[in-house]
Image (cartoon, rainbow, N blue to C red; front, side, top):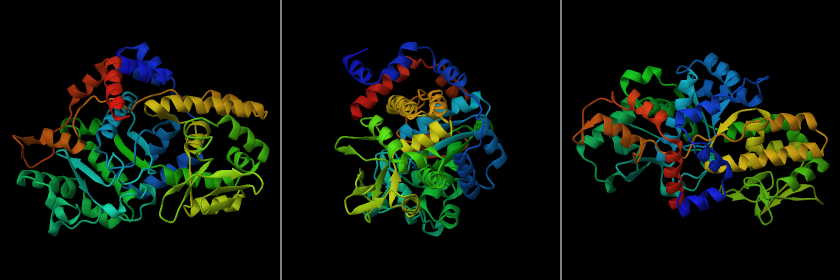
Length: 452
């Protein structure tokens, strides 16, 4: 290892452990498989996922199969941003993840993507990449809005061509073949017109578009064998789960928020944990959301028993917090996101390099807090949760974007041939399984170090 790798691993002992174990990516998947056990209960979040997907993809997937998979194989990717599945980090992450779902003979690759990032995030939720250029669905003035709060949608009109739903097209030089390819991809394959008519919010449109886009990454001969992509924005689901948990006085969420003695223990033990809160940084339990859709740090004022931030004060009372969540005046931190996903619902959250470290820290803080409060049965349940699984951050295929990947397989001498039948085949996917995990991690370390 070089100096850069040593520095990187010094702050990521969990990542170093996987690196030192070595073996192939297939060996690594085998380690994950041994940890998967069905859940005893069908939690609130699972019901919310099915409700959401039944609304967006009612004819495209079997809801019965989805329910069965969520119960028997509690796997989710929590690594992605809620964007078009096109950014290199995102599509590579899900190519890796799909090797696991294929190994388990599952019908779906399920991704709970965060929409708390703005439209101008480097994963470019605002549009898509093609030929090293960024194409925008929305104007620059809208680009700072978080995806989950964004109320606009893609509009499309075939009669006006590609330029009717992609801004700034005139500033980008495209060949006639490239224009034809993009029009075919978006209008004929991804059904952009249907998307623009059927869904009122960009976030729902993305779930439908990614479901369609995913299969075009693969060669026609193997598409039926590839698990379907279920790619949903998780923030609204977490808020909905919290609203229900707050209505139950016996729930842990209720006690953490409204029982002062319980709250005090959790505040102390999570101080300094990434994704929670610290001295003069982060926010306690929730982010406030301003009228201009900016996140406001909040702290708990003990005397007034309230969450307090710039121009915002919310009494820590169940009805007040429920209403604030429902009205999108507050947004959960990673503390509540993973309290729901990993610790209450029992999902194995397949994440990135940093999650591998902070989720284990969260587990330690939860277990310590629960033991201090005498909640030993819950502490034991939380201590058994799997928090050290990685799937994201490595790059088996080095295309600038997913659309570049599709163009590569479906063009000849930079000429579009009129269909999208070609793509990654079994040989490509087998090469992922045979890749050396040390090499994959080393390459990812180099990429991440350059961006830090």
